[in-house]
Amino acid sequence: MKILTAATLLLAAGLSLPVHAQEVSEDDAAWAMDFAMHDAVFTMYHEIGHMLVGELGLPVLGKEEDAADSLATILLLTDEEDDDAYEALIDSADGWYFNAVNSTGSGVDDFSYYDEHSLDIQRAYAMVCMMVGKDPDAFAETADEYGLEAEQQENCAYTFDQAITSWAVVLEQHEVTDARGAEISVVYEEAGDFTEFANELEARQVLERAADLIMAGYVLPGPVTFRATQCGQANAFYSPGDSEVIYCYELAEEMFRLYINDILPAYQ
Image (tube, rainbow, N blue to C red; front, side, top):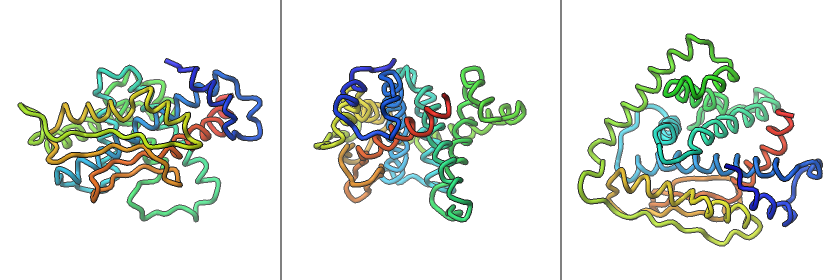
């Protein structure tokens, strides 16, 4: 579903767009907003992975960032209530892919090969592999576009099964069986120049849906806050000292611009 109202307000408000902004149609702006919001959904689930590790004291083998990516992908692949879950996954993978394209353009020497995150291109392909591993029919076209050979796609079923089994094992003892645990509060702070994105996050209940999903599934030992705010940078993170997951409005704007500047011209 494309929400044209917010995109119309976005353009009417004079959001600073690239030089070719006059060529961006209302429909294209709506697609860009969808892309930004889909990325926000995946990003929240990724940070929830960090939050569960921190709040529940879960063990992590390997990079925690990769584990958080796999949980976010699993949550979206298994969320039967979210009609946009599959689209959110495709858009998020495309986001990592096009970020990788931009990074590669700056030269291979600029890569940080030792980092808590895998390279963006690795994150994109890992997501697509899990997606086709869970539902090969639904994501067949996506896998082909990413150049995954038929044998690779078959192997992805094991990759997905391994990931979902591993997360199930560590989360099983924390599942809701009777009484729910502590509450997750949702806070939207003043957005300033990013009001259009804040309004869209609220309208789509991105933070609220994520909070409801976790509270219904797992018993948290203490209260947690999901907060959308201005950060001064495009980012999202889990703050263990505050028991908060922070989503920065600037990140939504950055993903909107990525779609307009890179993805839309590529499709055109």
